Image (cartoon, rainbow, N blue to C red; front, side, top):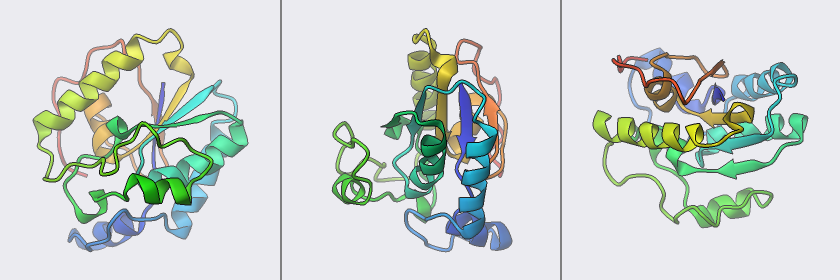
Length: 184
């Protein structure tokens, strides 16, 4: 499968410069983030993607939109690929609001409040990534899937820290990374 980190968000823009949480809830993409999403759509055209799994965070949905349009593939919303809940930007938007903002997507399998109530510890995201890895490994066509996700989730699946708009391949049948370094 291919893992794509969402484009630059308003949170990323401010946090990268200050290393202080700016308090932006469910951050949207910046103009650069939208450009990164369009660039990813072009770069992924020849990769044989047949479906997109995307986190319900607005920045991930905004990143997936031009990719889905360019590739003409279905989008599936799955909170399991969300970010590790640790900052204000990891407070999501309730399902009903997302469904109104994104009527082309099916949010029926998403709970109204789908993000954790408290900060997610490393063991929790490792378990969540392990569950997703196992679910994907059980699919015969996992290699045809694009997952639009977040820094912490991609790091947990691969052991690799990637930048906004960057993508990499991940084989869910391979062992999980033995060690994780939780620094952006």
